[in-house]
Image 1 (cartoon, rainbow, N blue to C red):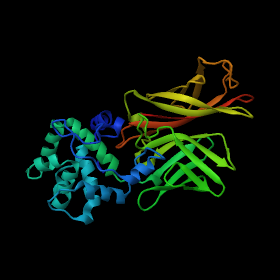
Image 2: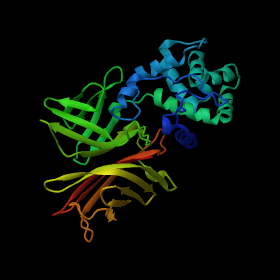
Image 3: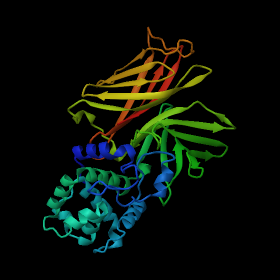
Image 4: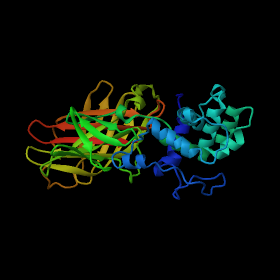
Length: 380
Protein backbone atom coordinates (compact mmCIF):
# COMPACT_ATOMS: atom_id res chain seq x y z
CA UNK A 1 0.00 0.00 0.00
CA UNK A 2 1.26 3.46 -0.84
CA UNK A 3 2.56 5.76 1.83
CA UNK A 4 0.19 8.20 3.49
CA UNK A 5 1.27 11.86 3.46
CA UNK A 6 2.49 13.11 6.84
CA UNK A 7 0.31 16.23 6.75
CA UNK A 8 -2.90 14.31 6.18
CA UNK A 9 -2.07 11.79 8.88
CA UNK A 10 -1.54 14.64 11.33
CA UNK A 11 -4.77 16.33 10.24
CA UNK A 12 -6.63 13.06 10.67
CA UNK A 13 -5.30 12.47 14.14
CA UNK A 14 -5.81 16.06 15.30
CA UNK A 15 -9.31 16.31 13.92
CA UNK A 16 -10.62 12.89 14.77
CA UNK A 17 -8.55 10.62 16.96
CA UNK A 18 -9.40 12.10 20.33
CA UNK A 19 -12.96 10.81 20.12
CA UNK A 20 -12.44 7.84 17.82
CA UNK A 21 -12.93 9.77 14.60
CA UNK A 22 -16.59 10.79 14.87
CA UNK A 23 -18.47 13.76 16.31
CA UNK A 24 -19.86 13.44 19.83
CA UNK A 25 -23.28 12.54 18.41
CA UNK A 26 -21.84 9.31 17.01
CA UNK A 27 -22.64 10.41 13.42
CA UNK A 28 -20.40 11.48 10.56
CA UNK A 29 -20.70 15.14 9.52
CA UNK A 30 -22.38 16.25 6.31
CA UNK A 31 -20.70 19.08 4.34
CA UNK A 32 -23.00 21.60 6.08
CA UNK A 33 -21.80 20.41 9.51
CA UNK A 34 -24.97 18.57 10.51
CA UNK A 35 -24.89 14.91 11.62
CA UNK A 36 -25.09 12.35 8.82
CA UNK A 37 -25.53 8.61 8.88
CA UNK A 38 -24.41 6.67 11.92
CA UNK A 39 -21.04 4.92 11.36
CA UNK A 40 -20.76 1.15 11.29
CA UNK A 41 -20.31 -0.39 14.75
CA UNK A 42 -18.02 -3.42 14.79
CA UNK A 43 -18.83 -5.51 17.88
CA UNK A 44 -15.61 -7.51 17.47
CA UNK A 45 -13.64 -4.27 17.57
CA UNK A 46 -15.51 -3.17 20.68
CA UNK A 47 -14.76 -6.51 22.33
CA UNK A 48 -11.06 -6.15 21.53
CA UNK A 49 -11.00 -2.66 23.01
CA UNK A 50 -11.66 -4.25 26.40
CA UNK A 51 -8.08 -5.50 26.05
CA UNK A 52 -6.28 -2.96 23.85
CA UNK A 53 -7.16 0.19 21.94
CA UNK A 54 -4.83 -0.79 19.10
CA UNK A 55 -6.36 -1.23 15.66
CA UNK A 56 -7.18 -4.92 15.14
CA UNK A 57 -8.64 -5.60 11.68
CA UNK A 58 -8.56 -8.90 9.81
CA UNK A 59 -9.78 -9.57 6.27
CA UNK A 60 -13.20 -10.71 7.48
CA UNK A 61 -13.74 -7.48 9.41
CA UNK A 62 -12.65 -5.33 6.46
CA UNK A 63 -14.99 -7.20 4.09
CA UNK A 64 -17.85 -6.83 6.59
CA UNK A 65 -17.12 -3.11 6.86
CA UNK A 66 -17.23 -2.77 3.07
CA UNK A 67 -20.51 -4.72 2.93
CA UNK A 68 -22.06 -2.42 5.51
CA UNK A 69 -20.56 0.66 3.89
CA UNK A 70 -22.22 -0.18 0.57
CA UNK A 71 -25.71 -0.06 2.04
CA UNK A 72 -27.71 2.03 -0.41
CA UNK A 73 -25.14 1.68 -3.19
CA UNK A 74 -26.63 0.73 -6.59
CA UNK A 75 -23.55 0.90 -8.83
CA UNK A 76 -21.35 -1.91 -10.20
CA UNK A 77 -19.80 -4.21 -7.60
CA UNK A 78 -18.36 -7.70 -7.10
CA UNK A 79 -18.41 -9.12 -3.57
CA UNK A 80 -15.33 -11.28 -4.34
CA UNK A 81 -13.33 -8.04 -4.69
CA UNK A 82 -14.33 -6.40 -1.41
CA UNK A 83 -10.84 -6.85 0.04
CA UNK A 84 -9.52 -4.81 -2.92
CA UNK A 85 -12.26 -2.25 -2.30
CA UNK A 86 -11.13 -1.89 1.32
CA UNK A 87 -7.49 -1.37 0.31
CA UNK A 88 -8.35 1.19 -2.37
CA UNK A 89 -10.69 3.04 0.00
CA UNK A 90 -7.75 3.66 2.36
CA UNK A 91 -5.67 4.95 -0.56
CA UNK A 92 -8.49 7.22 -1.76
CA UNK A 93 -9.03 8.63 1.73
CA UNK A 94 -5.28 9.26 2.12
CA UNK A 95 -4.90 10.87 -1.30
CA UNK A 96 -2.41 8.28 -2.60
CA UNK A 97 -4.61 6.57 -5.22
CA UNK A 98 -3.56 7.29 -8.82
CA UNK A 99 -5.18 6.82 -12.24
CA UNK A 100 -4.12 3.15 -12.66
CA UNK A 101 -6.19 2.37 -9.56
CA UNK A 102 -9.36 3.29 -11.47
CA UNK A 103 -9.37 0.60 -14.18
CA UNK A 104 -11.93 -1.74 -12.58
CA UNK A 105 -15.19 0.03 -11.84
CA UNK A 106 -16.38 -2.86 -9.65
CA UNK A 107 -13.55 -1.85 -7.29
CA UNK A 108 -13.06 1.90 -7.57
CA UNK A 109 -16.70 2.95 -7.65
CA UNK A 110 -17.59 0.99 -4.46
CA UNK A 111 -14.37 2.34 -2.90
CA UNK A 112 -15.47 5.91 -3.61
CA UNK A 113 -18.85 5.20 -2.05
CA UNK A 114 -17.55 3.66 1.19
CA UNK A 115 -15.24 6.63 1.67
CA UNK A 116 -18.26 8.91 1.23
CA UNK A 117 -21.50 8.77 -0.82
CA UNK A 118 -20.92 12.48 -1.43
CA UNK A 119 -17.53 11.71 -2.94
CA UNK A 120 -19.07 9.00 -5.13
CA UNK A 121 -21.80 11.36 -6.34
CA UNK A 122 -19.24 14.03 -7.24
CA UNK A 123 -16.49 11.92 -8.80
CA UNK A 124 -17.91 8.62 -10.12
CA UNK A 125 -18.75 10.21 -13.49
CA UNK A 126 -15.77 12.55 -13.68
CA UNK A 127 -13.17 11.99 -16.39
CA UNK A 128 -10.31 12.97 -14.05
CA UNK A 129 -11.12 10.80 -11.04
CA UNK A 130 -7.84 11.40 -9.16
CA UNK A 131 -8.14 15.15 -9.69
CA UNK A 132 -11.77 15.11 -8.59
CA UNK A 133 -10.86 13.26 -5.38
CA UNK A 134 -8.09 15.77 -4.66
CA UNK A 135 -10.51 18.68 -5.13
CA UNK A 136 -13.11 17.04 -2.86
CA UNK A 137 -10.55 16.43 -0.12
CA UNK A 138 -9.49 20.09 -0.33
CA UNK A 139 -13.06 21.37 -0.23
CA UNK A 140 -14.11 19.12 2.66
CA UNK A 141 -10.85 18.90 4.59
CA UNK A 142 -12.36 18.10 8.00
CA UNK A 143 -14.66 15.41 6.63
CA UNK A 144 -11.78 13.94 4.61
CA UNK A 145 -9.67 13.74 7.76
CA UNK A 146 -12.46 12.01 9.64
CA UNK A 147 -13.00 9.54 6.81
CA UNK A 148 -9.27 8.74 6.67
CA UNK A 149 -9.36 7.92 10.36
CA UNK A 150 -12.40 5.68 9.79
CA UNK A 151 -10.71 3.94 6.84
CA UNK A 152 -7.56 3.24 8.86
CA UNK A 153 -9.66 1.93 11.73
CA UNK A 154 -12.04 -0.31 9.78
CA UNK A 155 -10.66 -1.05 6.30
CA UNK A 156 -6.86 -1.24 6.70
CA UNK A 157 -6.14 -4.94 7.28
CA UNK A 158 -3.62 -5.38 10.08
CA UNK A 159 -2.95 -8.64 11.91
CA UNK A 160 -2.62 -8.47 15.71
CA UNK A 161 -0.38 -11.55 15.63
CA UNK A 162 2.21 -9.24 14.04
CA UNK A 163 2.30 -7.20 17.26
CA UNK A 164 4.91 -7.99 19.89
CA UNK A 165 5.41 -6.52 23.35
CA UNK A 166 8.55 -6.70 25.47
CA UNK A 167 8.29 -6.56 29.25
CA UNK A 168 10.70 -5.35 31.89
CA UNK A 169 10.96 -9.01 33.00
CA UNK A 170 12.46 -9.89 29.57
CA UNK A 171 9.32 -11.71 28.45
CA UNK A 172 7.62 -11.35 25.08
CA UNK A 173 3.83 -10.97 24.86
CA UNK A 174 1.88 -11.85 21.72
CA UNK A 175 -1.84 -12.04 20.90
CA UNK A 176 -3.82 -14.40 18.70
CA UNK A 177 -7.31 -13.86 17.26
CA UNK A 178 -10.08 -16.20 16.16
CA UNK A 179 -11.54 -16.31 12.63
CA UNK A 180 -13.88 -13.41 13.41
CA UNK A 181 -11.06 -11.16 14.65
CA UNK A 182 -11.69 -11.46 18.39
CA UNK A 183 -8.56 -11.56 20.55
CA UNK A 184 -8.71 -15.07 22.01
CA UNK A 185 -5.35 -15.65 23.71
CA UNK A 186 -2.10 -14.10 24.84
CA UNK A 187 1.24 -15.81 25.25
CA UNK A 188 3.97 -14.80 27.67
CA UNK A 189 7.09 -16.53 26.48
CA UNK A 190 6.09 -20.16 25.97
CA UNK A 191 3.00 -19.97 28.19
CA UNK A 192 -0.37 -19.36 26.54
CA UNK A 193 -3.32 -17.87 28.40
CA UNK A 194 -6.81 -18.24 26.88
CA UNK A 195 -9.16 -15.27 27.08
CA UNK A 196 -12.05 -15.47 29.56
CA UNK A 197 -15.12 -14.11 27.78
CA UNK A 198 -14.64 -10.65 26.30
CA UNK A 199 -12.77 -8.96 29.16
CA UNK A 200 -9.06 -8.47 29.86
CA UNK A 201 -8.51 -11.69 31.88
CA UNK A 202 -6.75 -14.71 30.36
CA UNK A 203 -6.43 -18.21 31.94
CA UNK A 204 -3.93 -21.05 31.97
CA UNK A 205 -4.91 -23.81 34.42
CA UNK A 206 -5.05 -22.31 37.90
CA UNK A 207 -3.24 -19.17 36.78
CA UNK A 208 -4.80 -16.03 35.39
CA UNK A 209 -3.23 -13.11 33.56
CA UNK A 210 -4.72 -9.63 33.73
CA UNK A 211 -3.71 -7.36 30.84
CA UNK A 212 -4.06 -3.70 31.85
CA UNK A 213 -3.38 -1.23 29.06
CA UNK A 214 -2.01 2.19 29.94
CA UNK A 215 -4.27 3.70 27.25
CA UNK A 216 -7.78 2.40 28.06
CA UNK A 217 -10.71 3.00 25.72
CA UNK A 218 -12.08 5.86 27.83
CA UNK A 219 -8.72 7.64 27.93
CA UNK A 220 -7.78 10.62 25.75
CA UNK A 221 -4.56 8.88 24.68
CA UNK A 222 -5.45 6.98 21.48
CA UNK A 223 -2.68 4.66 20.27
CA UNK A 224 -3.46 2.84 17.03
CA UNK A 225 -0.36 0.75 16.33
CA UNK A 226 1.25 0.22 19.73
CA UNK A 227 0.35 -0.37 23.37
CA UNK A 228 1.87 -0.33 26.83
CA UNK A 229 0.77 -1.14 30.35
CA UNK A 230 1.13 -3.72 33.10
CA UNK A 231 0.27 -7.38 33.27
CA UNK A 232 -0.41 -9.29 36.46
CA UNK A 233 -0.19 -13.03 37.13
CA UNK A 234 -2.83 -14.24 39.60
CA UNK A 235 -2.47 -17.67 41.22
CA UNK A 236 -4.49 -19.12 44.10
CA UNK A 237 -5.99 -15.71 44.77
CA UNK A 238 -2.59 -14.02 45.06
CA UNK A 239 -1.57 -11.31 42.58
CA UNK A 240 2.10 -10.96 41.73
CA UNK A 241 3.78 -7.60 41.33
CA UNK A 242 2.78 -5.95 38.08
CA UNK A 243 5.16 -6.22 35.14
CA UNK A 244 5.29 -3.28 32.68
CA UNK A 245 5.35 -3.94 28.93
CA UNK A 246 5.42 -1.97 25.68
CA UNK A 247 5.50 -2.69 21.97
CA UNK A 248 3.39 -2.76 18.84
CA UNK A 249 3.00 -3.78 15.22
CA UNK A 250 6.21 -4.72 13.45
CA UNK A 251 4.68 -3.59 10.16
CA UNK A 252 4.04 -0.09 11.55
CA UNK A 253 7.32 0.33 13.43
CA UNK A 254 9.75 3.00 12.24
CA UNK A 255 13.15 1.36 12.62
CA UNK A 256 15.24 4.32 11.48
CA UNK A 257 13.93 7.28 13.43
CA UNK A 258 17.08 9.29 12.64
CA UNK A 259 15.62 10.08 9.19
CA UNK A 260 13.33 12.56 10.93
CA UNK A 261 15.23 15.85 10.62
CA UNK A 262 13.33 17.93 13.18
CA UNK A 263 12.77 17.44 16.90
CA UNK A 264 9.58 15.51 17.69
CA UNK A 265 7.66 15.98 20.94
CA UNK A 266 5.22 13.33 22.16
CA UNK A 267 2.95 13.40 25.23
CA UNK A 268 0.97 10.68 26.99
CA UNK A 269 0.86 8.41 30.02
CA UNK A 270 3.25 6.36 32.14
CA UNK A 271 2.67 3.38 34.45
CA UNK A 272 5.08 1.52 36.66
CA UNK A 273 6.09 -0.12 39.89
CA UNK A 274 8.85 0.57 42.41
CA UNK A 275 9.97 -2.19 44.75
CA UNK A 276 12.44 -3.48 47.27
CA UNK A 277 13.23 -6.97 48.55
CA UNK A 278 9.88 -7.56 50.26
CA UNK A 279 7.36 -4.99 49.07
CA UNK A 280 6.28 -2.93 46.09
CA UNK A 281 4.18 0.12 45.18
CA UNK A 282 2.41 0.90 41.92
CA UNK A 283 3.15 4.35 40.55
CA UNK A 284 0.00 6.44 40.12
CA UNK A 285 -1.32 9.12 37.76
CA UNK A 286 1.71 9.00 35.49
CA UNK A 287 2.14 11.55 32.72
CA UNK A 288 4.88 11.28 30.14
CA UNK A 289 6.67 13.56 27.68
CA UNK A 290 9.14 12.20 25.16
CA UNK A 291 11.35 14.52 23.10
CA UNK A 292 13.35 12.98 20.27
CA UNK A 293 16.09 14.53 18.19
CA UNK A 294 18.78 12.93 16.08
CA UNK A 295 21.23 12.80 19.02
CA UNK A 296 19.07 11.62 21.92
CA UNK A 297 15.66 10.79 23.32
CA UNK A 298 14.56 12.35 26.61
CA UNK A 299 11.64 10.99 28.63
CA UNK A 300 10.08 12.86 31.54
CA UNK A 301 7.60 10.88 33.64
CA UNK A 302 5.75 12.49 36.57
CA UNK A 303 3.81 10.57 39.22
CA UNK A 304 1.47 11.72 41.97
CA UNK A 305 2.89 9.32 44.57
CA UNK A 306 6.59 9.22 43.73
CA UNK A 307 9.51 11.13 42.30
CA UNK A 308 9.45 12.74 38.87
CA UNK A 309 11.83 10.87 36.60
CA UNK A 310 13.88 12.11 33.64
CA UNK A 311 15.66 9.55 31.48
CA UNK A 312 17.98 10.43 28.59
CA UNK A 313 19.37 7.96 26.06
CA UNK A 314 21.85 9.27 23.50
CA UNK A 315 22.75 7.89 20.08
CA UNK A 316 25.56 5.78 21.56
CA UNK A 317 23.12 3.99 23.89
CA UNK A 318 24.29 5.71 27.09
CA UNK A 319 21.35 6.16 29.46
CA UNK A 320 21.20 8.66 32.34
CA UNK A 321 18.45 9.01 34.94
CA UNK A 322 17.51 11.83 37.31
CA UNK A 323 14.92 12.00 40.12
CA UNK A 324 13.26 15.25 41.16
CA UNK A 325 10.91 16.72 43.80
CA UNK A 326 9.77 13.89 45.99
CA UNK A 327 6.19 14.76 47.04
CA UNK A 328 6.37 12.63 50.17
CA UNK A 329 9.57 11.93 52.10
CA UNK A 330 7.76 9.41 54.31
CA UNK A 331 7.56 6.46 51.90
CA UNK A 332 10.16 3.72 51.91
CA UNK A 333 11.10 3.61 48.24
CA UNK A 334 13.73 6.34 48.04
CA UNK A 335 16.26 6.31 45.21
CA UNK A 336 19.90 7.14 45.84
CA UNK A 337 19.95 10.74 44.65
CA UNK A 338 23.70 11.20 45.12
CA UNK A 339 24.79 8.07 43.27
CA UNK A 340 21.93 6.80 41.11
CA UNK A 341 21.90 3.16 40.05
CA UNK A 342 21.88 1.85 36.49
CA UNK A 343 19.07 2.68 34.05
CA UNK A 344 18.00 1.35 30.67
CA UNK A 345 15.38 2.69 28.24
CA UNK A 346 13.92 1.14 25.10
CA UNK A 347 11.62 3.09 22.78
CA UNK A 348 9.68 2.03 19.69
CA UNK A 349 8.23 4.56 17.25
CA UNK A 350 5.13 3.72 15.19
CA UNK A 351 3.01 5.24 12.44
CA UNK A 352 0.78 4.37 9.48
CA UNK A 353 3.29 5.14 6.71
CA UNK A 354 6.79 5.48 8.06
CA UNK A 355 5.92 8.69 9.89
CA UNK A 356 6.10 8.54 13.73
CA UNK A 357 2.70 9.40 15.17
CA UNK A 358 3.12 7.49 18.46
CA UNK A 359 5.76 5.81 20.61
CA UNK A 360 5.86 3.30 23.46
CA UNK A 361 8.69 2.03 25.60
CA UNK A 362 10.02 0.78 28.91
CA UNK A 363 12.46 2.02 31.52
CA UNK A 364 14.22 -0.05 34.19
CA UNK A 365 16.24 1.22 37.14
CA UNK A 366 18.34 -0.89 39.50
CA UNK A 367 20.33 -0.10 42.65
CA UNK A 368 22.81 -2.66 43.98
CA UNK A 369 21.56 -2.61 47.58
CA UNK A 370 18.44 -0.49 47.23
CA UNK A 371 15.28 -0.11 45.18
CA UNK A 372 14.29 -1.09 41.68
CA UNK A 373 11.83 0.61 39.35
CA UNK A 374 10.09 -0.69 36.22
CA UNK A 375 8.10 1.64 33.98
CA UNK A 376 6.22 1.63 30.67
CA UNK A 377 4.99 4.64 28.75
CA UNK A 378 2.94 5.51 25.69
CA UNK A 379 2.88 8.86 23.90
CA UNK A 380 1.61 10.39 20.65
